[in-house]
Length: 404
Image 1 (spheres, helix red, strand yellow):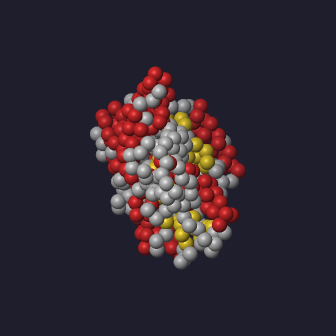
Image 2 (cartoon, rainbow, N blue to C red):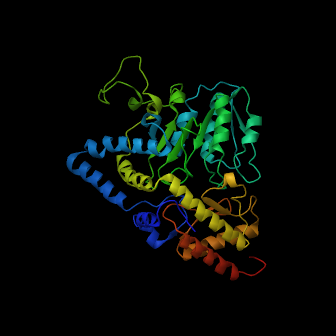
Image 3 (cartoon, helix red, strand yellow):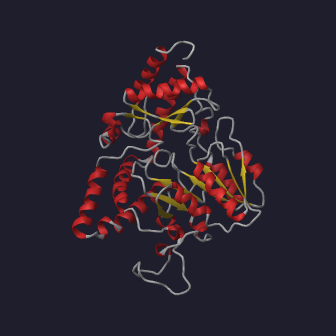
């Protein structure tokens, strides 16, 4: 079986860049990704420069602009469509607070499966501006319900929030359909890309998103405290940032400490959302992993991780475990969840015990809402999948029949 579009030696060589794979079978990238060993040297160079020279453009602003451009290339955007943020939460709030909300406006999302940070960002607008937050139920396979959203939006809908892949169920959103729906009605589509960007292909030239935010710490294999906010240029030019700082003001080549007059011009595109100062150490570390992702290419990574996820899902079914993810092919992702939509006490106890058993056998996965979550990235292998499925079989055979 051909598990990946990339030559196996290429993936094997790339795996050596992640020494964490020597210590663990690491199926926990949806919580945080492994970082490459080269990140340490990159951060050390930056720190040496700060300690010895006070900081030079080569390890500060130049690196920052390179990672901005490399992330833009990764998703098919232009560099001035990318803002630098600390994390997904900051990116979400940057867009949510930039709309000219009026009492009577509404926003739509699926609270069943969206991250609390998306929900609270809209609740904040509800409490500050009197908007209505409309919720829709998830689909039968726990994905974002595009048809229900279409029935819920109206002439007062200003925003829809969705995730590329949901953190609670691992379901992939049909962003092409949702994007077309929102674009036709001039509704801002704001996307949380934390659970897929770097592992699943997304080209914003083809998929009609208005804005998407991503932290570096998951599938981009970077540190905490740095991330990206994509804003489509045409949409960005219509937004007034809720928070504004000097980096968001266009004064040409003037020094950052220079002041303009009483009137100002915003930076073009998404750069108006830059606040600064930046996480330069994080940018130096992140550039290493962005380069590694680019070496393989996201299409090849997607092929690889979906192959692993399908094999793992089939194995879980063989062992008789309840599986939430992968029931509808277009919603299938690299994130596999064992569990039930409404976990009962016995199932939760079983999965908690399995989680502990796997950890004791050097396997990392995550527990979320009573479900056991396994996530695959380019440093994982088919051999690891087979080994973990063997461990799960051994664990279940050791359980009393009534429990297993």
